[in-house]
Length: 212
View 1: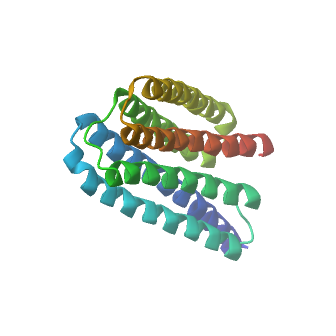
View 2: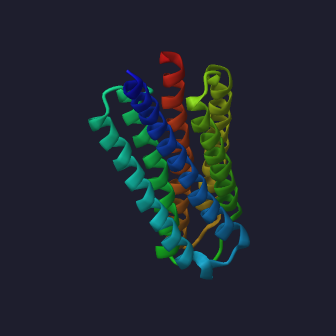
View 3: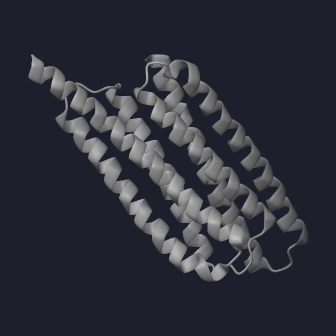
């Protein structure tokens, strides 16, 4: 019996530790992207993209570990579908950030627009809130604090949407270079998608709170 309980709590920590690691990985990726955009040095794009690429691969490894644990461990700290959904939602954010940084690099962007800077700041803030929310999963008082953090992310998603729509409208109104217009629109879309994916993570977290 003692071994049973020791294994139970070890397995419980294993899931939460991996989720914490995945959430921190998101913050690292968003921070790298925000830093290069804020400093405004396009020459750093290549090295930043390579760093983010490594982080995205690291995130894939974490997701794989969580899914392996699901297949091996009978007693899980959360409902199995919720664990699978949360791991996938976090991974989707990492993929979207990776795509945004990749487009900036591949399109050889030499100037970051105010909208790009704004959304990368919003993305970092949303990622930090996700990290805080994930950390609450293992705590008994999560039903009080976690929904508030999820609401913050929802508000960030709304802010990103507004910046995105106004920026795209301005592009079509003011930008005469069709290729540049398409490049910036796709980058803005990838960034806005990244924040939307953050909101998807909180949808899963809210479901966990309601179910648990």
